[in-house]
Image (cartoon, rainbow over all chains, first blue to last red):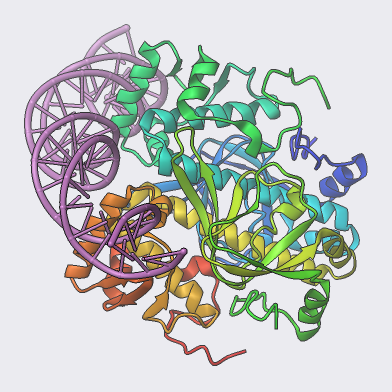
Amino acid sequence: MITDKFLRRRRGAKLTPQERETLEAAVSNIREIPSRQIVVEAGRTLGRSTLLIEGLMCRYRDDRNGLRQLVAVHVPGDFVDLHGYPLKTLDHDVATLTAARIAEIPHRSLDEICARQPDLAKKLWYATLLDAAIHREWLFRLGRLDAAGRIAHFLCETNARLEAVGLSDGRSFDLTITQNDLAEICGLTSVHINRVMRSLREENIMSFRSSRVQIQDLEGLRRRGQFDPDYLYLDALGTTATDAAR
Amino acid sequence: MITDKFLRRRRGAKLTPQERETLEAAVSNIREIPSRQIVVEAGRTLGRSTLLIEGLMCRYRDDRNGLRQLVAVHVPGDFVDLHGYPLKTLDHDVATLTAARIAEIPHRSLDEICARQPDLAKKLWYATLLDAAIHREWLFRLGRLDAAGRIAHFLCETNARLEAVGLSDGRSFDLTITQNDLAEICGLTSVHINRVMRSLREENIMSFRSSRVQIQDLEGLRRRGQFDPDYLYLDALGTTATDAAR
DNA sequence: CGACACGTTGAGATATATCAAACGTGGTGG
DNA sequence: CCACCACGTTTGATATATCTCAACGTGTCG
C-alpha cells in the first residue's frame, strides 16, 4: 500500500481507512529515481507533490562556495515537498540520497481534498508542521550541541523516525549515506565527523560501517545528543514499542 | 485593524477583504503582555492561537545546562503559534522579547474557517509554511555561516520582514533585544557577538546601539550573510519598494 | 546613590577547520 | 583474474574561530 507509512504512529493524526483510500486514489503515478538525483529545483512552480515510498531523500541549500547544508532528511512515509502545495514554489532543492521510489500527487487532487475533506486537509497540514518541528530541533542541534552531540542527536532522531515506519529495530538500521552527507547534515566537515565517530565507536556507544548504524548504548547516545523524541509527536512514548501495530 | 499586517506583501497569499473580516471576527480577545514573559509552554494543550500585533516574540528550546537556542523571532503580523492548531500541543516554549500586544483566536473559530473557507484555510497553512521556510534558512545560517555571517544574515532577514510590515525604512529599525538574545539566535556567546559586531561597526557596515539597528552598507551586509530574500516569499523583489501599498 | 543589567575588553583554552597524504574497497575493463 | 580507477575513509600536522573566565565600564531606575 502506497500510503502505508504516511503519518504512521503520529499522535492524533492517524488516517482513517477512508482517508487513506482518498489519498491512494489521488496518486497520479509512481516513479523510481536513481541515487543523487535532483527531484525539485528551488524556484520552479510545482504542480504536484511527492510522497516518499522507499529510499532516502533530502532538502538542502548550497552556499556561495559550494558548501552544502542539508535542512531535512526524508524517510519512507514522508510527504517530501508538500510544502510546495500552499507555497507554489520551493525555496530550496530536493534530491534523492539513495535510489528511491516515490508517488506523485497532483495539486489539483489536493485542492479537492481541501475543499471537501477538511479533516484530511488538516492532517496534511499537520504533516508539514511535523517537518517544521524537526527543523526546529535541527536548529537546536546546530546551535547548541558540539560535534558528538550533533551526530548523536541525528542518529537518535533517524532511529526513532525509521522505527516508527518499521525500518529500524530500535537499535540498528540501514543508512546509506556517506560521512560527507553526515557532515552536511551536522554543519561540520567530513574529516571531523570521521574523528568524532571513531571516538563514539571506541566508547562503544555506536558504530556506522558499510551503511549500517548499530547503537550499542542507546541511553548514552541520547544523553550525548540531549535527545528527547517529544517533537516527533509519536504515539507510543519512548521507542521501546515493537512495530506490530497498524 | 488587528490583522492589518498578517501576510502583508506575501506573494500569492494576500487576504481578500472578506477573509480579513472573517479573521477579525474570529479574534476572541486582545491582550497586553509584559516583556520576557512566557506565553505558551511546551507540551500544554492549546485551545487558541496568538497573532502578534505589536512587539517582538520568540520561540526557543533550552538545553540541559540552561543554554538557550532561539528557533524563531516573531514580528508584528506573525501568527506566532498557529502551529499549535493542527499539532494541538507545541514542542517548544513561546515568549515575549519585548512588551507586546496580541490577539487571540480560539481554535474553534479556526475549525469553522477550515470547514467553510478552504481558501482562507490554505492561507493559514501557508503562513505556517513561511515559518518553516524561515527555519530552513536559519539552519543554513547556523550550519554554514561564521559569526559575522550569522549576524549579518539575521539582520538582513529582520530588516526585510520588518520592512514588509512597515516597521523598517529599509536601512534602520528598532530592535529591542540584548546582545545575549542575539547570541541565542546565532548559536554563539554574547562575548563573541560583541566582538564581531564591533568589527562590523568598524567596517562601517552596520551599527546596533540602544536598541536601534542602522545599516550603512546594505549590500555589504547581504554579502556577508549570503542573504537572498527569496525564502520570505515577498511580492516586491528586493527590498527597495516603499511600503505604500495595501 | 547604589544596585543591577548590559556591554566591553583581555588572556588563555579548546573545538573544529584546513590541507595533505595514505589507505581501503568495490567495480570495471582488458 | 588481475590491474587499475573512483570514491569514500582514515590519519597527521597545523591554523583558526569561537569559547571561557574574569574583570571592568556604563547607563538606568528605584
